[in-house]
Every structure is written in C-alpha cells, then in structure tokens.
Image (cartoon, rainbow, N blue to C red; front, top):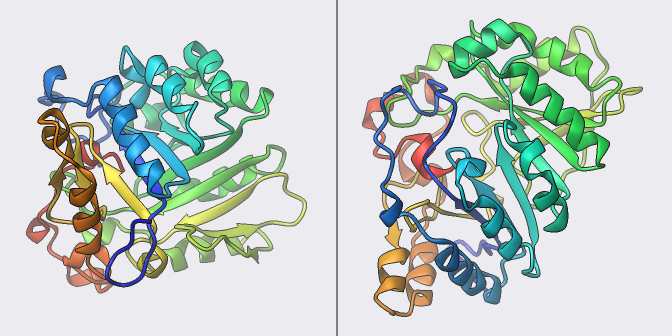
Length: 326
C-alpha cells in the first residue's frame, strides 16, 4: 500500500508514454518548435512494464496511459499489450487521431474506457486550437469506439471567450449518444499563458447548462476528480473537473510517472523523483516511491489555493502540461 502523510492511499497510476504530440494546443504545448525528449531518455517498454509491476504489487488498481499523445509512440501497441496483461484496469487518454489504427490492440488489451481530448465541435475552431486539420478524423474515431462498445469520455477544457459558447452544443451531443462530456477548468502550467480571466468556473458552467436543461447531480465514486451530472432523457451525461475552484485533493489517490521516468506526487508538485535512473542503476525504486508519496502536500502541490483571481501563474514552479502527462 502506498500512502501519504494525510492518510490518502494511492492506487491509481498515470503513465506518460511520451511528451511528443501530433497536435500543438496552446494550453498544453505552446510552441510549434518544441524540443521533445530524446528517445534514449524515455522509459523503454520493458522499463515501463517493470515499474508498473512494482506499483501494482503495492496495490495500484488502475493505470492510465497519457502523453503528449501516447499513441504516436511507434511501440505504443507493444506497451499497451504488455500492460493489458497486468491485473489492473487499463485506460487511456488520447486525442483520438490513431484510434482506428490501434483499435485491435486496445480491444485485445481489454481497454473498456477511452478519454478523448476535444475542445470544440467546430472544425475551423479545432484547427485554431490544435493547428491540425483532423477534426472529422477524430469524430469518426469516437463513433468507432462507441460502435465497439468502448465507453467514451470527452475532455473539453473550457476557456472563456474561446469555446465557452459551445457548452450547450456539447450537452446536446449527449442527447442521443452514450458519452460523458467532462468540462475541465483551465489550469495554469508552464508556458500556457494562463490568466484568471480565461477561467470558466464550475459555477459558470452549471449556470450555462441550467439555462436550457434540467440538471440532476449523480453520486460519484470515492476518488472521482469530476463532479457528475445527468440530464433526464439523455443517453449520455456530463461532469465538471473543478481543479481551480473546488479541488478534489482531500480524496486524491493519483500518482504520475512522466515519460522520462520521474514520479510526480501531484499534478502541481514543484518536485519530482527520478525512478528511471535508479531503475537503470539496478537500485531499489520502491523506497523512492514511498518517500515521494509520503511527502505529498495537502492540496494543489502546496503552490497555490482556490483564490485563483489573484494567482500569478508565473510564480508556479512546474513543467508544461505535455511533459507531465495531465
């Protein structure tokens, strides 16, 4: 069992496979000419599996593969297949571009839930946000997942003045489709030009939806990051991840392993523990894991609080989102 000093048991591991991505979303990876981590410094498939086994032996029940875009790795299928043999729930967060190509691997590995990052339902705005013209490919792949009975959650980062006017359109999507839309408050990371006036809050999102729909709260699981809701008559549902205005830190059970093998005990932690170097030196990494999680701060990495309107994002010491893995 892996626990911190506040009694929170950590049984959910997020593993970033790469900091590379075929999109260039400004809130995640600001520059077009980004210096990706050299392949030699990334965890290799056997190293990912070895570290995953250590975490599973300590009680980890769920592993999520993230990126960058995890499916751009040439050996993504090999990694997914290997992890799919572990006694855990294996899930993935992806931008959806390579789903069709890797669908047989996902099915064979027993993946039953896929999170798709999609911030707009407008092809022109999609191009503006991602700098890539593949909107219809992503939508087609979402339909493909649904056809194969894989649960789809759509992650939409809501940004005031950019896509907050599409909240109703996303809700309408759930009327006839069994998807969950997850509205995410815009969070500050290195280089993403976060300011408080771009943040569209939990309260604002709910107010917007309640103008047109009857909204009912849904009881969540113990460690849910999202507050879940349903609309009578809709096949799908929606949830809100309110990291900035109503964080879920008190029940957090998450650990993050970056693509270069660093353990982060919080999305906003200003420190990290190098597991990959220790592994390559044939050292015991378990004490490093235990020590890292034990030192976890009470909330938000100890770097800020929910009074976000006065937050100066430049004072936060952290990586960019793409190098953390979300």
